[in-house]
Image 1 (tube, helix red, strand yellow):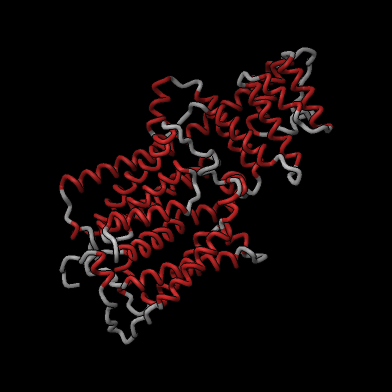
Image 2: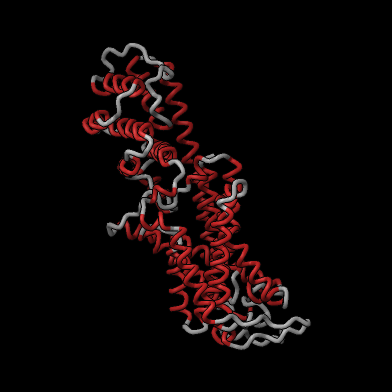
Length: 495
């Protein structure tokens, strides 16, 4: 307001609440004992909500694991076939922008075996297990493991569809088409297959039957689909690489020219909340969001939409609580909380800071798992697979995309960098406060160790950006860009 430099976050947060000059009284302070009770309730409800993730298989999060896995197999093996046409230098270039094309058959086999083990239980659908075993048999046979493929046939259940598939499979692979003079893809022999396995099984049948014309048309359709998928992935990762380069240039500009913090930070002091106020807002908003989610997802009509837009549902009580206690009493506190600057130069600097932050975060998410994998710590194949974007109807995907790209970054930055980091900074230095908030942020994503470390480092950089700029806007921008390329890219590639 008066042009003085913005005080450190720890000093601002520990100062008394501001006097409101618009006739409204300051909010009544939170009771420390009530805050502890809300914290315990929030932790208990959080574990109740995510108990299946913590104690069960990661496949429990998929609505239909057999459908999701079949779709992932289709994508990966098409990329594997297209990768066989690339040179070594082309593969290296694609690896540098984040597209890995080696080891796909082995990863696909592991994925199918994991899902079969997960579903092969008395209470599960036996037909789904047969479909996955049939796809695994085709994968093994096509990649040169015929003996292991025959072993999978022996584990199939006994039915007319299975018998038809098994006899055709043995004729085409075990005897190299002996006695198979005619093959029709719609003859019931491929009812257990879908996607890539169906295409490859059909191509094998046409080849064994000597139907050259149909085989050429069929192979051409597979090649078009593979080229289409690889092209979209290259466009997606190429765009992310270009934005990352722009971010690194922005980072170099800030470092070399030493952009002063006053040109980045918003004019005027930050919201001067006490530690009790910050912790009270954090635990109550988190608890109310969990309660709202658990109630809405159980409603007969709204439950479906509430589940697809979970982050929006979780964020609304937090936004309402902030508005009720602060923003309606003092509208200027809204801008101070988010760090919205008043000058065009400051806004431009925040935009550049967001680009630089995205570059750093993208490198962390891309290469930390790669580094750990080189050390023998491999990510679980289900990490990052969103079955809604793969198999659900288009209208569900739109709602889910809006939630993942817009509402999720906004909510997570408010909760973890706005309230939690602000509360920690009232007692801790920037680095330990950033580390603690980042670890809690990473833990809520339920990834394996490589993914957890990548997301935790992402949260750490965002917290440091909050400290440096005094604004949540760089973190929100970087978070939205990241989710745009990860969540939105996954949906776009699968159109």
